[in-house]
Amino acid sequence: MPDKSDKIRGCLFGGAVGDALGYPVEFDGERTIFGKYGPNGITEYEKNPRSGKAEISDDTQMSLFTANGLLVGDTRGNMRGVQGAPRGYVEVAYQDWLLTQNSSREEVDRHERFSKEGGHSWLLDVPELYARRAPGMTCLSALRQERSGSYIDDYIKAKLNDSKGCGGIMRVAPLALNYQMDDIEGMKELDLEGAQLAAITHGHSLGYMPAAVLVHIIGRLVYPSEDNQMTLKEIILEARDTVAEIFDGEKHLPELTSIIDKAIDLSEYGSPDDIDNIHQLGEGWVAEETLGIALYCALRHQEDFSAGVIAAVNHKGDSDSTGAVTGNILGAKLGYSAIEDKWKKDLELSDVILEMADDLDKGCPISEFGGHWDSDWAAKYLDMHRPEVLIKHQKDGQA
Ligand SMILES: [Mg+2]
Picture 1 (cartoon, rainbow, N blue to C red):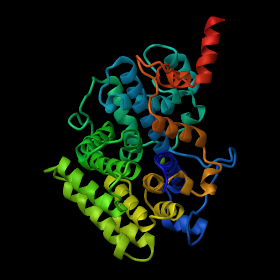
Picture 2 (picture 1 turned 135 degrees about the vertical axis):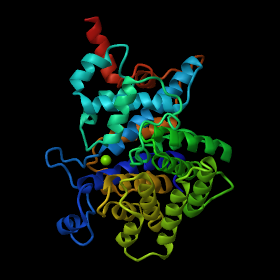
Picture 3 (picture 1 turned 60 degrees about the vertical axis):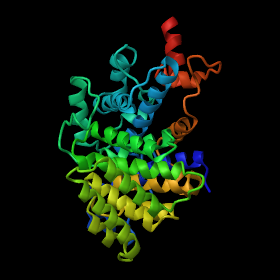
């Protein structure tokens, strides 16, 4: 059995693998995919010939910023004794992601990083994150609106748009990795927080309710109760029922529960060919379909990470996001150690992804009154810099 640390790495890294495998075919139809890669579709990374790396896209970029925001919130809570809901810190981190998509690193350094107003994420010190990898338009426009607007506390109530794109669900997994809940009431709270994180940019209930389902599933996989070893199917059913309770009466809820049931059914009784079953679930551009396709692929291939992510990307729809969410689930279930070496080699930013996973696993080690000090942690989550960048900046400042 993989341990907690291995599952946390598996979830974050697994999501990045599915994202990177699917990104080159995100906008390709099936004739193009199977014409180019053969009857099994894309089964290996398509690397950028210049860098030699398999590129991650906005799904993984934003997942990393989600994690960065959560850990800034926790560190603030430990150091100052005050901490708001995770959504507030995560929105600030998404504003930082927005900076990476709008500006060069030099511009961000000049205007934001070393002023008091901007730059709340050490990830801004990672040059590769400034690459634009088909960022979702809804994410960009909602964050721009919020940047110039007033303070929001309840993103579900203060909805900015009616989008149910998959830009919310594809980035929320770190929430479930960072907080261990002891009972179902705690899990409900966290599921709802997952919906809030998605609602920062996606206002339609089918844009945020699937994020709550994913948070529930990943939480159960990474932190199982000792006496209760549930199967993946049992976990998915519990997630469905819990989220149905949270959003009782929401008019689009039946669409969500029915696609979850359909995914389970197809994984058990569907065609032997994954693609036939995926066609019955949709294309994954909208969040309930992304969830449906990911659940189907994870259930059908629950002991085989590679088979699951390969199934999840070889269709005409939103391959990188269906790949990312499938990779999150299977990575959380099977652990990083179960991910084949071929996916670990040449994945862009694999070191940063593992560093962030290990930070989520470790949790904030410093506190206002604690004797223990961790200067690397303080650099990243108090001063918001990579430790080596902070040291260089301090030296330059003195010179
Ligand atoms: Mg993407």
